[in-house]
Image (cartoon, rainbow, N blue to C red):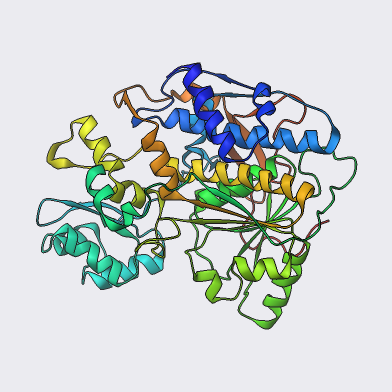
Length: 467
């Protein structure tokens, strides 16, 4: 990988985002290494996607103040940031392992592989019930020994559970769900309706000062989007259902810069609160399975009726058409079913056709940064043209883009050292005590990214705007 390739890939992404071509002169890239050991260009993807969000924040600053600024991003720093959830921790406490015991890859009776995702209690209960397995990895292995990987995937689909059979890249592209991705964009950005432009607040100190973002997301991609917007000055309020189960490191990592509230949108009072929040919001980010929020009456269409000037950002796993459009999915599942994990295993020469996933949840992080960049592009256009704007992203779209960047002969390259990781760590004090986390790799010359609020429990705040 070289500087010319980085600029070319970035230029294509910037064009997809609708960015001003002249802004490309304001960004520079450092580092030409692999970033992380992989058969895919994960370091390049990290540098380009986070850099796009940073440059779009600089564009927001220029639109509001008339001042241009330079942006730079280092590949190794961006790649380390793609693993931020691994490094976020409470000082003097043992780091919590994100993956549940039953989650992971299993070799089935036909010698092929399947992946289960059981990190949430309801998914674990669903999987052990569906496969009639004991609640242990050994118990699940015994159950899967009795069936083929295709049969296991059929059971997962029947019970609406996340997981799937490992395929080769060729098999995925021949599968109806993979064929539905042919010609798919990296993301979409569309104007909906014709409301008047909204105005920026005056005299900002940061690019997104005064911008209100409603964060209704889970796991990594959506929280990364909200976390990125917060780093550039937006007020981000994350809403989760009562008694929502989340993994500790994900709350620490994805919660930087945000306020968190639990809200039952199915209750009358909760719905009224939600609608009031939407009316005052500039951006809403929704990361639940397609149809889930629509069924609750709070999907993108309902949101845009409440606020005809809002930017609605949506994320799903497998795209918005095709037989798997409404399937639950996570980054690692998309890697497995699409052939990415198989390609990694082949590059590493693993026995028994074993999988080797990407060295980071790259589809999550890449999608999150792209969502933030697209949200800012839409916001800039809303301020000029008016209307509501809809941004759509999908983990499988990001995965296809990563594949199309081409292979990388770096599967055995060295990992970042502890010292290299430590150089990018930040310290914060907050409700969780002393927390260490990875900072953003993007450097803006006049308005550097900064999280003004520490991570907090999901029920730490009330469901209202602070300003």
